[in-house]
Amino acid sequence: MHWLDVSILIIYLVALAILGFIRSNHSHKDPEAYLLAGRKLSLPGFVVTLVATWYGGILGMGENTFSFGVQTWFIFGLPYYIFALLFALFLAARINQAKYISLPDQFHNRYGKTAGVISAIYILALASPAPYILSIGILIQFLSGLSFGISLIIATTISMSYIFTGGFNAVIRTDKLQFGFMFLGFALLLIYSIKMFGGYTQLAMALPKSHLS
Image (cartoon, rainbow, N blue to C red; front, side, top):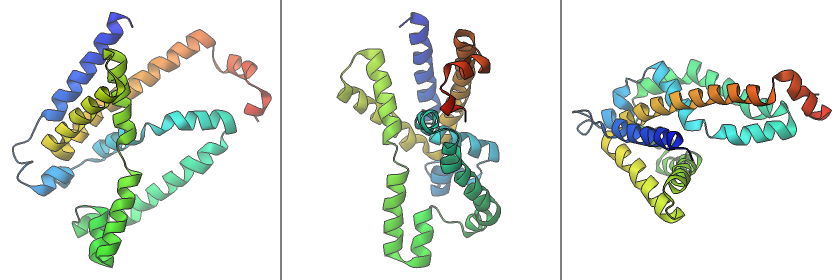
């Protein structure tokens, strides 16, 4: 790698650590401040952290779309937008008024302990941070030449440390940084791809007809 590439990655990791380890004075005293950012998360902040958290799926989606076409969006994208809109319009306000800490908390209070435990296990599996920690571990391995196991331990330690220290506020701060890098990278990738391979006309000529129907 060129020294400039390495420098950018190092700056990114250092900035991520600094933002993650910033700690508010009351975050460790108030459970709601620690776990829910004091219930003061704005809409832009919500969008940023949601996009940054689920952004990894775009890699698999891109491959799936290339293989099966636009139907991928109708299968995986459209239902998500519909139900997210329904949740925002009809459920979000009621859930906020109930002042629950988590979804399993709500299931526990409404349907009993068993429902709360089952929902907690399901959500833990669904929202597992393992793919993202794995990505950081691979990046550290690539940069440092350390073994994969050691790199994974370092990635896990860094991630868990700043979350433990700063709570949900730390997650939001780091997600804002990553959101900016993601879309900057997307823009640069788009510009580079158009420059190297041409625009839609060249793409249409290179792809099989089945990919355009």
